[in-house]
Amino acid sequence: MDDPAKKAAGQLGEYGYATRERSAGEIIKDILASAQDIIRSEVRLAKAEIREESRKAVAAGALLAAGAVIALYALGFLLSSASAALALVVPAWAAALIVGAVLAVAAGAMTSVGLKRWKTVHTTPDKTIGDVKENVEWLKRQTKS
Image 1 (cartoon, rainbow, N blue to C red):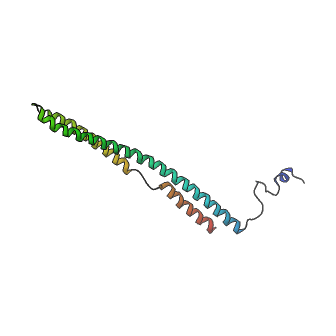
Image 2: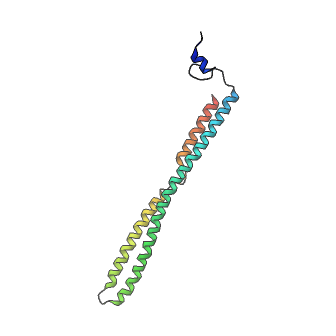
Image 3: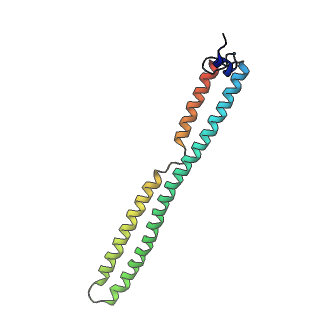
């Protein structure tokens, strides 16, 4: 019987897989090629994770910088309150002192939030490390079979 489908597929089996047995060398070569592909993928994943964490670090740094700028203005108002205290009969220095204190509290709050966010930034690619461990285990199982 001449089956046109088998003729078109050449020497391939029913599902398109080669019907011959592969040698141990070919299997090891395929495993090593797969391992290289996996490692390349993990490196790309690590780069992506580091980029994402870097963005978080930049945002936290911006809050820290804003807090520092406001703290400088607070210092300016606190110094201004000392001169205003001498210029007025009513204790206006207390009003300037309150303004400076409010700015100092705002700077402290912004700095505190920035530091909390800064502490949540991860510098290690945790997902990639987990994936690499899984891949090593998989490779161990493949070479034992």
